[in-house]
Image (cartoon, rainbow, N blue to C red; front, side, top):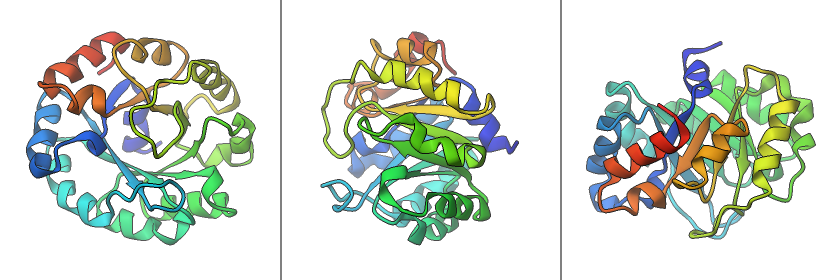
Length: 228
């Protein structure tokens, strides 16, 4: 198992820069890394698979040296159609783990293999309406599986309670060494239950960067989830 995959297996809070102040992006990343964050989550949206358009490899490349120098990793979540066409560019830019959506490509096995060929940890995501069995045939390729606990692309949504049972079912489906990530509506109230149901990487955006003190908000979530 790679060092990156091993890092993702421990319970961790992953601040999502989608909610950061982009005028102070580097400084805000420094704040949470200094507070202990070792996984920085990067949400990439293309305006097709989900309505918004966000960021691309240039942002990953701009953060890579800073994040890696601090001993942290960049966890890139591709909410884009046909992600296999972009994997190489994100790997080249400095991504450490790359997640593709099962719903976004007819070539999920190929996409995951391309991620591994690029030297990154490979992950697949499923939306709230997608059954966990969608990952059964690629389970052995996965370093991590991402359970979306809101519908991707729309900010400010509440956590979908049924996601907790879905996380547990994913844990039962996947090999023991595979990390499980949860993304959407994670805050001080939901982080603990997610961890107890089997998630190890808990993505939090507005709960951290929407706070007046992101470092303190990060610490609150770490305590709630008994994370690192």
